[in-house]
Length: 312
Image (cartoon, rainbow, N blue to C red; front, top):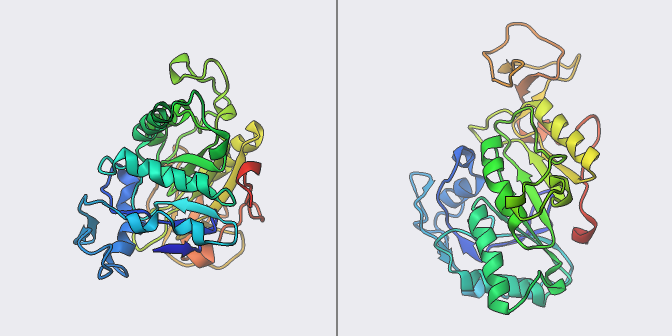
């Protein structure tokens, strides 16, 4: 399964693995799980990977998928393994290596390896170099970016050090669905501690791309608009490429536009409060309009920055 996709930050998906299990609170709205339990539930590859709409922890590796990008004639930016997690503990390291070698064999594409298992990503990349007898990340794999996904500050702060420690050339963050945030932001201007393996250099020097998006789906949780503005401004100040994927099901109220319930607002600490009585023309006021109507405009424009090395 895969090929062309409607995901805004890539051109195609490639799924050499399928299946997963939840690791954090953002997993509650997992679109891949919903897809596997719904439209794909009778497909041979996804059969019995879910029960009662949830992943059961079974992970499958597909040898037949390893060569797929070699048959794509047009260059693409490819998201790898979105119907699972390539760095899941049940995926053997040699299989991950074979996926990576396919990327090396097809230089016309750009590959985005995204995971919530940042520690295993770090350990794999170090193992890969040792296994290959290399001292540093090879130029042959400069077309590959590695990223971690996080929807809360706690998850980001837990995963970010492992991503920075990974001996790779390109790193990115996928902050989606963003379901909780704090005023400290990502910390791109902060200094990497020595035990992160990068000495005393700014975090932003080691992150090339930040993607932000709100949650979609029937039980989507709202995203505070000021979280998005804050991350965008932090990226601009640090010279890090910023990509705004979507508001999700919820959108800030636009002054003077008609809107209906449900309407909610965030207090000054970012907590979601009860339904509003009456209207406020404030970016802290949100209402549910659906993913398509909510769109992806931020301050009247789209933000689709991509690092030079990941452009097609």
